[in-house]
Amino acid sequence: MSAAENQALKKVLREHELKATNQRVALLKLLDATNEHFDADEIYLALRQKQKNVSRATVYRSLEALVEQHLVSRVDFGDGRMRFERCQDEDEHHDHLICEKCGQVIEFFNLEMEAQQLSVCEEHDFTPSTHTMHIFGTCAECRKKN
Amino acid sequence: MSAAENQALKKVLREHELKATNQRVALLKLLDATNEHFDADEIYLALRQKQKNVSRATVYRSLEALVEQHLVSRVDFGDGRMRFERCQDEDEHHDHLICEKCGQVIEFFNLEMEAQQLSVCEEHDFTPSTHTMHIFGTCAECRKKN
DNA sequence: AATCTAAATGAGACTTATTTGCACTTGTGT
DNA sequence: ACACAAGTGCAAATAAGTCTCATTTAGATT
Ligand SMILES: [Mn+2]
Ligand SMILES: [Mn+2]
Ligand SMILES: [Zn+2]
Ligand SMILES: [Zn+2]
Image 1 (cartoon, protein in one colour):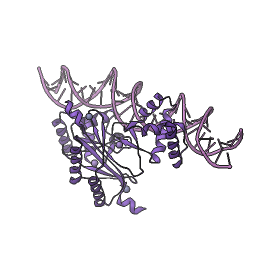
Image 2: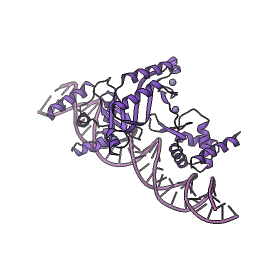
Image 3: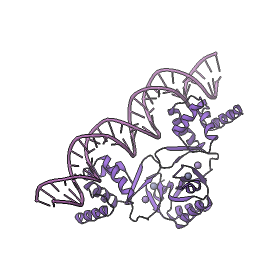
Image 4: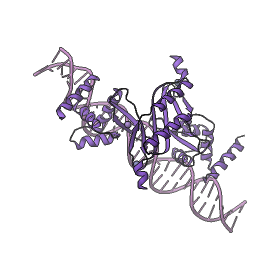
């Protein structure tokens, strides 16, 4: 039920030294329930639609706190706004295929590619901390539609 | 000499169906002369400093046209502004290592990584058009300074 | 259960990057 | 040289995100 789920989310927040406010619980629940990569305004509007009272400022501030605690991660597809997605594990990682036609986002993880990245860093005596790998193109459905 | 260089740049512009205006020539010359990844305002200020008369609007509009013609490419390091760099060949491509300490950008090209990308796309029945791969971290000089 | 207080929120002003409308130039084909 | 579409400058408009400050609230303390 929602009540139990709320309690679980509150616990998660508290475990990360964050006050478990209604706004934060609602935001986290929203991201938990979807696979999409929402931007701040989409999150704001979705919460309003669910009769949750939140302000845009709080959406931005909560996201900042959640990202800092690795409960949410920030992705930038280069279109001028940041997107957010729930991340399960602190060390979970994946990259993205983004369909330029329909906007669909496909997630992937390729160990060989990650290994190549480390090798490139070594070659340049560079210590990596994070990376982003985004492949833009056309998804199968959109290609068929054509 | 500069005069010959200007002529060459005008030719390039005309070959791409772009009017060879002083502003565009100056902009292209500026990007040609550097390896840096400038943002629009840095370009605007650099041109002003060289006594070129340009407006910010024209910098943005010219960059748009040049990007469309693949004479310049746009890169987004996720810090809220677009950067631009001259691209030589239509099909030239490289990825980036970005030092989070000093901002230095190191370019690289790794054939194996590019191959892995194609293989990932195949697995997902995805037709790629472009991609961006940015590795953030600490460069050798910054690591030593610590 | 009532009280306390630092942290969080809401409303709206503000900032920064980029875009746009419009009157005025300028590059280029004739 | 001329004509005129394309390009430019300026200032106003957007758009994403941040900040200030008065008010509320979570969670600790009596
Ligand atoms: Mn994702
Ligand atoms: Mn580059
Ligand atoms: Zn698609
Ligand atoms: Zn560095």
